[in-house]
Length: 363
Image (cartoon, rainbow, N blue to C red; front, side, top):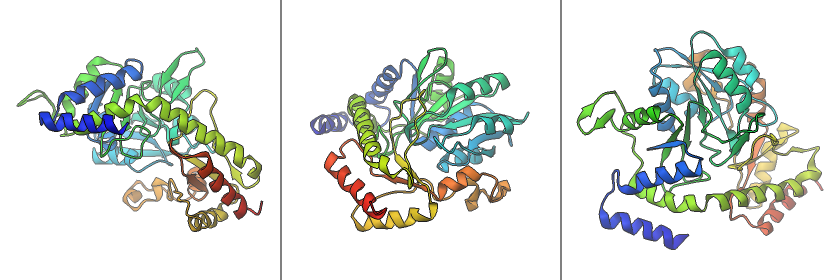
């Protein structure tokens, strides 16, 4: 891949088309083809994608945006910055994704949108969420920053890519993502060509042509260099996804014996899982930090996504939530631990990781 990345970079440098160069449109077209025909609107990053998605809905100030309590803060941040009110709901203890029953219970006449996060690489329950959104006439937005390439099969037999089911999907090309740039980047995914055209305007100062501004928009453009590099990396995404899934399967097999100590990542049989993260849930949360420190001493990096539920973040104290209102999200924040997961992780490296985990648990 490296020679192709070098060539793509040199081509952009030779043409000096650093802003809105041809690679941006080419990447959008190729990603749209990969996703089965959804329109792709590139933008500067995943947070901007969420902001643009909500901005395009033209909601009144104070409209309620339903979001999961167990997610990265950007999901709330986009709503808060636009003067909208995040309404938090709990998640499922198995997949960690938003609980449709909690979404249903949170709906009010003030609800402006539902944001479903496809956490760690697996689709939320799009069957129920789409039904709820359609029944209430509320737009469904898919935060697909962690699950690009995942699919969901509906009871009808329909199979759709994550991010292409709701009114708008968003994604991120942050370097650590499954399709990662060498800097920031993001995109919006939509089926409706008119909505795609509006989002394209909003991402470019609200203009349809230069110096003609129909809307208040953002300056949120995917850099041409990043687009050129992403074109190369997109060609390798299917193979990288298969490699991640193989890594997850090896972890499953090696850690199955620790069922009393660890809950392995659950799989919704309707969704493929692209394993942005391989996240364990410790049966005894008080041992999570001990395991993490032990693995660190073994030279094994781990991560906690996320150490605090978003309602406990000081920036969102104004929402007025109290400890105990989101028991599943709160329990997960104290119990989850993500192991190294990437396409180049070797079987030997995984053997070492799982052996160290076995040593910690005395097996």
